[in-house]
Image (tube, rainbow, N blue to C red):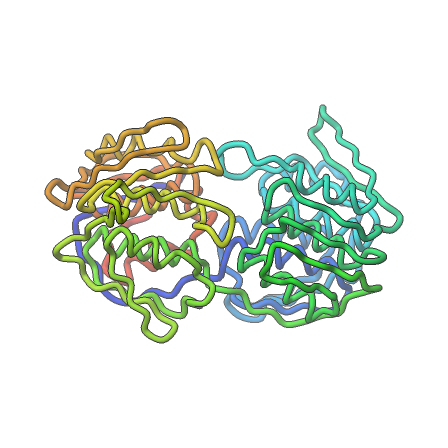
Length: 436
């Protein structure tokens, strides 16, 4: 189990470029299964979860060639579908939640898709009902082996239909879209997720020959086509990493420039940090954060009541950044209520922040009130364990702001979502060491 040793309390300085978007990569990579033609993808992040999925695609028979850092070609012209029912696949698929999105493309193109119950972060229940209910509405037959926790869908030919999703699941919408593009007739998906990464998937599929309209809205209309061709695709920068670096700059009173952020795809993220009193400057397609040597002050509502920051499906604020917001608030002037609506276990890392000296009241599994220190009292260094990707980075930011040397164990969780994070932080002055 790897460990980070972090000497906190130092200001950082310089620029940092966000990696390609993890959550986009998991969708885009599964879409290569929809065509036998060559697909070239750029800006792929070199992180554990994405590399696991590329490895799974290789075992499935996809020809993968690395062109340069972050750039690969994929050719799914001779797949080994027997792998889907092998013990090896049942082991490989469990290690990555994103593997669920191979089901839609395989079902649509080959008439069958299988997956073991996937793993992933321990952040609460994330049900797969939306995925399979959508595929069943397209005409698939569903089966589930409870003993082996193995799911399967099969269909001779999918048929377009109308569906209203119970939840605007991003991966569920992606799976259904990838199944519907090769179905007979027209499919309408209402209450579809509309995150930028889902928009990117739809734009890529349209370049491949799909007919998807309503991209960016919560109603997608898909006219099925006979086949799809190859394309080139460049992924967006990772908005969660961009938000992480904004929080890092504020907590360490550092002047940082985050480059090539694709401002138009950041939604509410800059404004939510501004509500905490953080100066977020737009410079071309970069974000500049000046050193907050005088701290930052949380804005109350106009009637004077305490600010609440909560998550919601896009275009609401992404749940993946609430843990960063919570950490940043620990050193603000003022108080804020953090309301994590979408997952019930994501606030359970706050006990570690409380041990570091933060003033946080955990109201229930979904809500925490943070009373900021205004840097009058710094967090104290300690030894802790990363529970999941986002909480792990939040604790890392807390450790970089704390006085003394902290240790974070189980950093494999952080590596699942952040590329070479220790090297990139050292480049802007962080004192962080990886100990295997």
